[in-house]
Length: 155
Image (cartoon, rainbow, N blue to C red; front, side, top):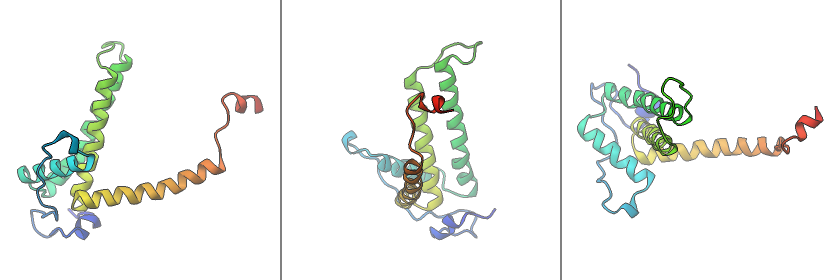
């Protein structure tokens, strides 16, 4: 299996059976006031690396885990809205919020694994936001949202 250029660029030995990420284990923060999204991603990634070194199979599992977490978020939403008549309402908005947080964190852990470190993942996210923010700003400027009902009257 060929790894993405980001894994090779992160200094992983792509010829070995086991990949070696560039980041070191980060202890989880002890004080809840110091927990940030990225400190949690760093601690979780380090813990995963220490229990399941990121060889090719583990990297695949971390990416596939995102699909599992997304399914759980969808299930919670269906349960909150009662969209499945057979099951009715079986989840709350809080359940959906928790599952969406799990999706976001799982995606960032997978990104940190592929880029080589949580810091590199953070840089990648910032670059992505900057690229997309410029496009969004241009679209908003070129096509401002019309007042509700105004568009219907104009047609």
